Length: 395
Image (cartoon, rainbow, N blue to C red; front, side):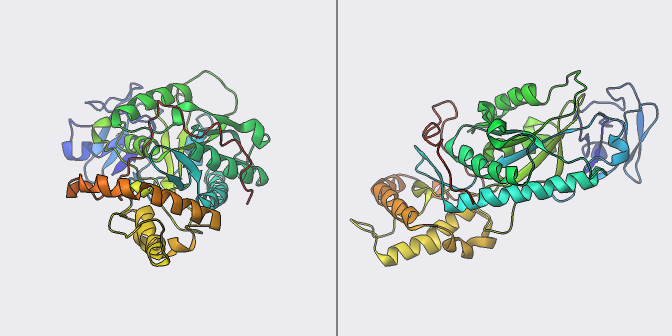
């Protein structure tokens, strides 16, 4: 797919097949002619699939490949004529333990993911500095924000403190860290739409300010981040949005927004992850693990527990990405305390799991997938948040 920066044309009148592949990575707007929003005009070279601009200074014919691995930053020559962009690093929380009704916070692997996420953010920031051609101007973050859910709060706490050590914050972490409710979890496409309009109004609306941009790190949730990424990569079209989570735990997606743009653009590849530790996408949730066939009575014997931690939990948390499934048992459970807690929760819900499973059709049993719907109403009280403001182990 070909993308062109800062033009708003969709040349359907010239070639419909090519037209469907052309959109603008800055404003993502479609029109039915070769006229852009700035009054310029353009034409298509059908051989090379390039837009030739005639009269608009805002046009650029820079070509990019539209896939996860090769979305690029604005070139230094192009961005020099614009205001300096503002960057938003969107981070999904680390892996956590839940029973659907409660958010029990990060498990040990989630804390490690959060720690290494800071190093990943630091590395990605260096990449942006290099591509912008000004390595002397350090990309520092003024705002570190979390959704308010306990898992998001704890992830931001660990990652933010590490970033403070790496000198990536403009102020102390305590002064930068805050809760922003609009980044909370969503459970439907309609919710994503309504949430996006609010986020766009608060964070991606043009102003007349000439002040230097202030950069954000946002700790949010997989369904919302995935929805935003799909929307932007579809050229600002909701009809191509499919609800579900695509973002691994502690993955990083970078958006760039320049004052005057209609929409932010995706920088680098979305869902960047640290490969130092296993990559996971689903949470540890006994309700969604295949426990119904296990002989669990008053206690979980060693053989059953071995099956749970070596097979059931690994397959659950990696989803369709099986590359790290053999490593999971080395990280989950991470401590003896965590192991005992998991055993208690698994025993507590085993009877309910068996009952519910017997009442479900076979098609509803395939619960461990990358398109996980994380439970927890976004409108209800964010469970555990007020009780989670405590010291998290500093790695």
